[in-house]
Length: 172
Image 1 (cartoon, one colour):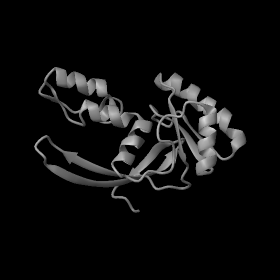
Image 2: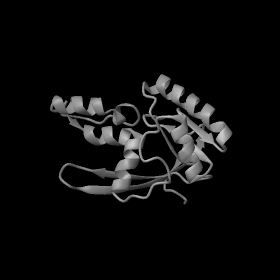
Image 3: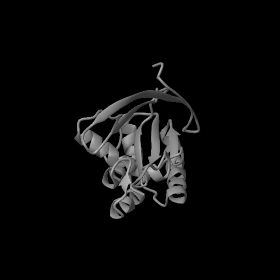
Image 4: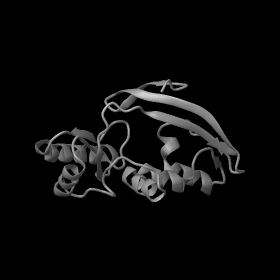
């Protein structure tokens, strides 16, 4: 094979797979392994976006190591907050917290769930946005600098933090 298009989901977001393709001189149709690695860790992705001047919701500047550290940040940015797994996906390792009394249990539960699901219990905290719109922009680019905007889609209809319906073009 000269090239592999991984589709969507697991292989498309797997930096090791993208790296293996490169080692075997097979074109991986997707981001390079370094980009996947950087963006796959959500707390690191927040840091990169902040450094680049991209607005992000208020939250931790990196990983939250302890309940006390997370609670202090939650009090600073105000409730409600989301406790999220840095390596997460598929709606796992996420808890909404609306008060101090809920924080410890939610943090410990999300941390354990993340460790079980992803083998990584690194957590971060960010402000919870009530009733948000989830809009994704599809962009295709090649190694020659050609870029095409393929449109946007609204992924706001979710159940348990997983997309249920994606609508394109977005009505938003």
